Amino acid sequence: MPVIRGRIPAFPNSVPVIVVGAGAAGAVAALAARDKGAKVMVLDRDASPTGATALSSGMIPAAGSPAQRAREIEDSPELFAADIQAKSNGRSAAHLVDAYTRASVATLEWLEKAAGIRFELVDGVPPGHGAARMHALAERGGSALLSSLYKALAAGGVRVQSAARVTDLYLDDDGRVRGVRYERNGRELLDVGCSALLVATNGFAGNRDLVAQYLPDVRGLPFAGHDSSQGDAMSWAGDLDAAIEDADGFLAHSSVVMPDRLQLPWALMTEGAIQVNSDGERFGNEHEGYSESALFVLAQPEGLAFNIYDERVHEVGLTMPNYPEAVSKGLIKRAATLPELANALGIDREGLEQSVALANAFAFEDAVDDFGRQFHASQMLLAPYYGVQVTGALLGTEGGLAIDADGRVLRKDGAPLPNLLAAGGAARGISGDAGGGYLEGNGLLAAVVGGCLAGRKAAELAY
Ligand SMILES: Cc1cc2nc3c(=O)[nH]c(=O)nc-3n(C[C@H](O)[C@H](O)[C@H](O)COP(=O)(O)OP(=O)(O)OC[C@H]3O[C@@H](n4cnc5c(N)ncnc54)[C@H](O)[C@@H]3O)c2cc1C
Image 1 (cartoon, rainbow, N blue to C red):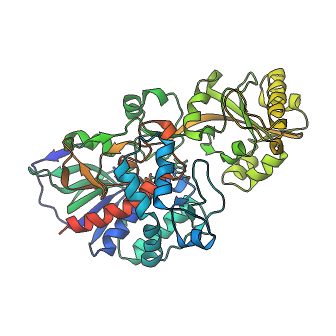
Image 2: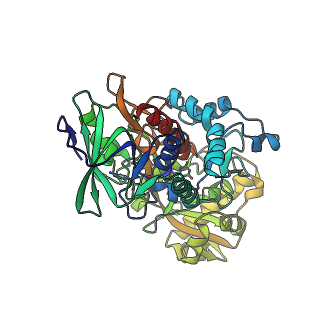
Image 3: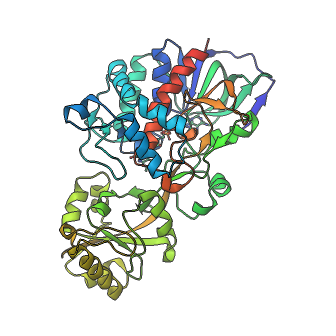
């Protein structure tokens, strides 16, 4: 993935703004640049682009929205920013956290006005958030969000060229991107010129070599994200003299069924499930956070864990994404007794019985256990029992190209490159430099709000 410096071809076609990647970040950025009057072309490597966005919940956090006010929910960008920083121990990039939280409501309102995409407030306060502030389409889900964005792009006359993988960037001697080369349908190589380039190619979680280089501690985790996350932006960074920040940050999940790549709802844990290893023993506080907990699972025999719960928790699961699919695939085991469940899951019977008895004893007393988990009497586990084999898995990376609050890519000396922007997972995120820094919604907040800010700036820099 080279950056070609100084040898600028005579481009047969030019577009003021090129956006590379048609996930949430690229699609929103393209809409924002178009809305500011720039002509835009979007290039995506996949024949039917979906990206990680389509695998997500499609829920975007925003603080201080009219929907929140209508339900008398007190919230503000400051409270939201404090929650993001609390999760990462104050290690999230402050300029991005502040910019994204402040622009969160205005971005959703602009998407409604400019693109006809209507968001509603989702019930419930996700762990680590101080208020109900997730906003989503009525249909829910990342695919629905992406389809709405594509409809708006088509209506705005923005062309999304699929099966178009950008391989090379053309840079002049002043460090200005003059165009890109892309591979169409895996064969033909085409050049197209631009006056501003916006990279929205997501992170590098799907690239084992880059994961081993930047995230050695998590390289043992299987990958359950989108295969197009190959870290092309990271490969370009060196030749661009661009800085990379927070490369140690990642998004993982501790309840993924492999090889199906089925991420089970975290609500199973918060509603009372426990997680044990093949000896039937608990090994941590299941409420700690799904990203960092993935590493606890990795440390268990064969990297496996088993979520154990009961009918009440199962019923909650049935209302959540992915769980019904796990049920229909026969992945969820049900048994009248714990020995039968242990047998169905292939784990130690006595260990399981002891763990459930101990968890119920803590629950009976509303007590906190040695791992720091608060148990509740209303969440005692009762027959019939349910269980599922899971593992920890890597979903995404949180580090990337250093950017300013407008999405301009920064050089190692801190100065912005003249006409290069980045948004979403290709850029530095807002989760700091460790897996424990990821607060639910950070990914889509950066993609949608960061995409909007960067798209507007790209239009301004284009001519
Ligand atoms: C299973 C899963 C669940 C998640 N759940 C949530 C959630 O509930 N909430 C949340 O906030 N975040 C969630 N995330 C994270 C969130 O999905 C991402 O942070 C966000 O979607 C990133 O958007 P993006 O546009 O940067 O990347 P993507 O949506 O991945 O889009 C990148 C696009 O770039 C294209 N591309 C890559 N390289 C090239 C190239 N060289 N040339 C052309 N095109 C290229 C790809 O084909 C892809 O379409 C989840 C992630 C996963 C994997």
